[in-house]
Amino acid sequence: MSHEPEPYRIKVIEPIRKTSPEERRRIIKEAGYNLFAVPSEDVFIDLLTDSGTSAMSDRQWAGLMVGDEAYAGSRNFFNLRDAVGRVMGFPFVIPTHQGRAAEHVLFSTLVKPGQVVPNNMHFDTTKAHVEHRGARAVNLAIDAVYDPVSHNPFKGDMDLDKLEAFLKTKVGPDGTARAEVPMVMVTVTCNSGGGQPVSLANLRGVRQVADRYGVPVFIDAARFAENAFFIKEREPGQQGRSIADIVKEMFSYADGCTMSAKKDALVNMGGFIAMRSEELYRLATVWAVLFEGFITYGGLAGRDLEAMARGLEEVLSEDYLRDRIGQVRYLGQQLLDAGVPIIEPIGGHAVYLDAKRFLPRIPQDRFPAQALTVELYIEGGVRGVEIGTVLEGSDPATGENIYPTLEMVRLAIPRRVYTSRHMDYVADVVKRVHARRDSVRGLKFTYEPPVLRHFTARFEPA
Ligand code: PLI
Image 1 (cartoon, rainbow, N blue to C red):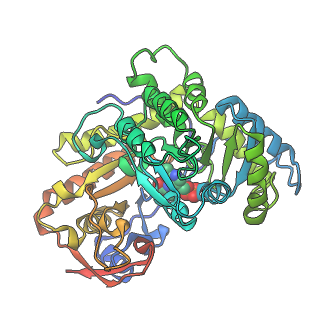
Image 2 (image 1 turned 180 degrees about the vertical axis):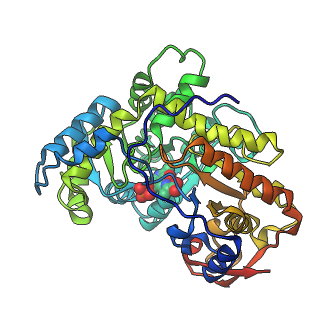
Image 3 (image 1 turned 90 degrees about the vertical axis):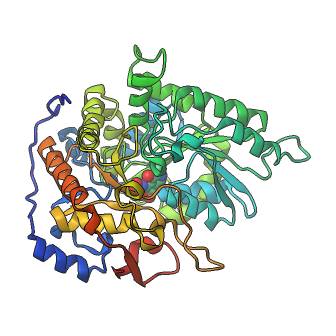
């Protein structure tokens, strides 16, 4: 597969250190076979997340020097507000320290106990914040997203029939579903479903269905530019448009968005809520002050706001996006060519290994995806993340594991950080583990925390 050179020069480097397999066996044992407990200095290629791990550009770094660290109304806040307006078309912006803080503020404003929030697929913090408000989170993505080899080009789409059927049951005396459903959310791209895109046609459809039931639409915008690149590439009639134009149309179907700027705004920390309604903005500012600091800084310094404002426009570059998504594909294709089972089509920010097919002899109650993260680390110091039974958690009533349909290891690629030679190395490591897959053993808990267990759980070989 051809892979164009990276459209940037590297001006600053961070040395990384490769450990020996013996060291790694000791380190992972001490970490309780949980990669979250491994210090990053003991990781050679860190693919734990693409969140907050981007390399900023010279323009963004220069922006740090024009940070105006005023408590109220810094120039950088206005630059951010204007950038959000130009890119997304929303006039009102509240900065927050990261994406889940945006969820916290928005849901505190709109979501009440007993309500239900539909999403194509909630990210885990989004689900947790819906539940924190005493509401329920439901996933209504199309069925194809649960099939690891379905080649639907927009596997992240919301199932519009499921959405309509769902909203129909929630209509109240006022003729809308608003009392029970405070908003419909769409996550672009669909991270929990393999980094799969949502089409413009689907976003338009969500808007139409939501309008019929009087419910507002919000986009979880973490990877909005990557989503737009897929639309340009795959959706009929979109090839001649600029990414900026497609992005504008995507957001035109929404009343607002939550944003983790740690992804597609190319910064190490930051987020925001943006919206069309001044009334909603006023209501949300109350919570923003309580949780995040003043409404023009949201837990961030002026310099962070400036880097975010600049990243938000930089990410629209088609050269950048072609390289970015091309690099993810470059890794994924090498694995496919070697017969390694991955989620197809290859997503926008990560390659997802299909642990059920990779390690078919390990039953789900022995955590095959977790075991695979451990083997990748031992084999080559590569850190991925389990998105499977450990992450899914257990039923609070019975304590029994909840078994998800997809049992995956996500290899998330930080933006502009690694070269294709790093990707060649990662592919080799995965292939070597695949070649010796029959020797891989499952894991069992030695410590299982009651909530969000994946972060701090400890294991031993079963
Ligand atoms: O990590 P935050 O709080 O800035 O953002 C939360 C968040 C919201 N939505 C989506 C789609 C996410 O992917 C997301 C965070 N994702 C992480 C940390 C990840 O590793 O994918």
